[in-house]
Length: 332
Image (cartoon, rainbow, N blue to C red; front, side, top):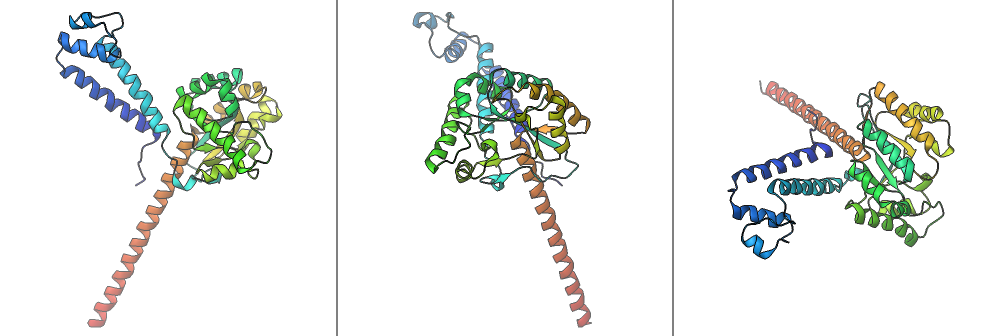
């Protein structure tokens, strides 16, 4: 039997359901008198009610009704749970490793869509709308300087369920000292964390350059260095049809598709994306984030290891049985 460890999305849903159920039961069991309503009102309004009015059980303009308080608590739990799950460590075998895809059985037709160089004003917004319409979650490798310029877009990427990843601060191809590489990655990491509460664990070097210092520093910090197996070549600005064909031609189970939502005019990427999604869906593909892809690979590796171990045990038992039979035959 396969390892049935739940995905990040499944664990999020389960925790939220449990939390909401717990709060709802508590709300039903608490006596509904004026004093308890006063406590709830004060708690949900940050304890800012007027002294005399609160003493007399009279709601003030700053108070929140118990129902509203429940909604507020649920929203807070949901936000904190998402942060906690988005900060889960990636599988150990990918920490400090460079990879361009994962090895999955051909029947597992999943692919990760990734977007570089954002956030960007028009194109990031348009790509988010297309992904939302198709109920697809993607992975966004963001440049620190752009995050600083458009912080609200980075927050929107996360709010819509996508994964944030590190793409350096300045997107420079030059050679970096260790200190310079550290600034490029750490500064971006710190800003994304400040804005979203997410600590990035995925890194993609600008231009795919692996030997100018930044990738080595990322590996030393246990980042997973994510390359790609399907290149849209959209930085060359091919026609939408040509761009889509680049991705579709190289798509494979466990693959990672590279596109851009920032860094220039990405109108052709925006035009090509619906076609890419529709065609891959026709081929039976599902879309996952890079962390989900790594989780699937981790499950497959553990499944194969368990199967091998089971086979080794069976083989050893058979060998022992044959030895026992031979011993009994000699005795006879």
